Image 1: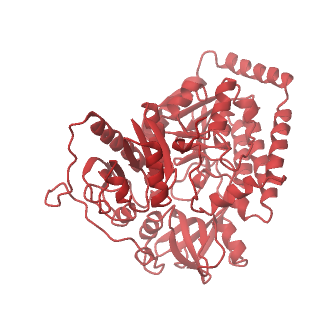
Image 2: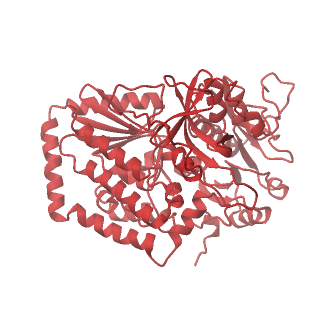
Image 3: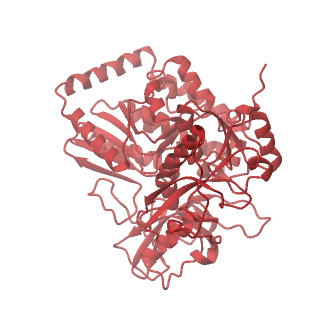
Length: 578
């Protein structure tokens, strides 16, 4: 079928649906829903049989839905209507929630139901809204959309009207959620309540709160069981996070975004909490102790950590759960130090686990944008990433496995290719390219790593097309070694089984020796330093040259400037045929 996506942005759900539908041989084109005229033009150009709206912030115009069936993906149970669906579900601590696919009509979220999928809600104090969306919501939405499309394409299925007299219609219409609904009372709210409020707003819009009489949006909360203090007081800091006391414990806050003083004030960025406070309230963290966390001590689950190591038998598991998968200069350096220390442990295999939400998305564009010189910070960040990749490539003491629990993009994909083996969950989406960030050339030794896995024609296609690919396609191309169709817990168990199998293989020593010999042969043919120098020569032009494309694209990305048009690589209906 010819399917047009009308979407506010090409977010994680839209990308996953694009991957799934193109694998099923549907012809999919994408249009950002900028205004009625643009959307109407896209429909006229593409002449779709069906429209799917994975992520909208406004209603589809009647001129479209009256002429083409439009399937809306709503992140709520059957009967749920209105904005802030996930926010309310978390705030109310619903035990079960879901995704409904309904047909657009003249009233928001009121159309007939084509399909729905429900899921069990994880504990709200342990799960961010952004994580819930990328995992349970995306998985349920994919199943529901595929069901709806199959029902539509085969014909004969009549969608169910939303009849609130039916007992299964448990959802109701609700109002938007406001900051007053989320407000934290540090003198009254316990740790569970504080975590729930922050988690239910994570990603967007954050919880509005005051620190040093400055209004901040708060994100990225974690529990802390051992530190205490006067409720509301900042009692500790650790790397990028601050720890704030509650009435019965404390919470770590990883990220802050300053609220602009007024409508005409400059835009602000979501930043690591310590960076934000030190920049805007220079003395706010004076006297606040740095409470270190050793990644190699036995794992504690009741505190904040972004890097930690676990050893099980002859295998070491190195976790790095960086917010949104972004890795700034300091995080790259700390992860490299942790990896080098892992190589000194009595183990045969190192598994790079990444985080549950993302494996890695490469350099930290927000921190780069905020730096005094974004060009200089870009240079420092990419060199720190390269140092990390180099440590992995040149490890001659163990095998390394990259285990992708979550999505990866740009430099994060090529970081994974530094490992000897790359395994991903089947649901993972990869963006193995840099071009969409202002024609950024990229580094991380990709010109060495990619051709070792993918033939030249496919390598060019991967890096130039700027489109996401699924784990199954990545495996078929040779980009990764295998994809595993399991939930996250099952995936981790399977990775552990494979890592143990590798560690105890009868030919382990011979295979390791073969790996070392291959690396020596590669080095003789062309030294790694030469690959790095050639890549960085191009990156230097991106950062310091006359073409400002990278800096403009980064600015639009980090400040979330609304799209003025849909990029042509997404909007195939706008391609000019010669």
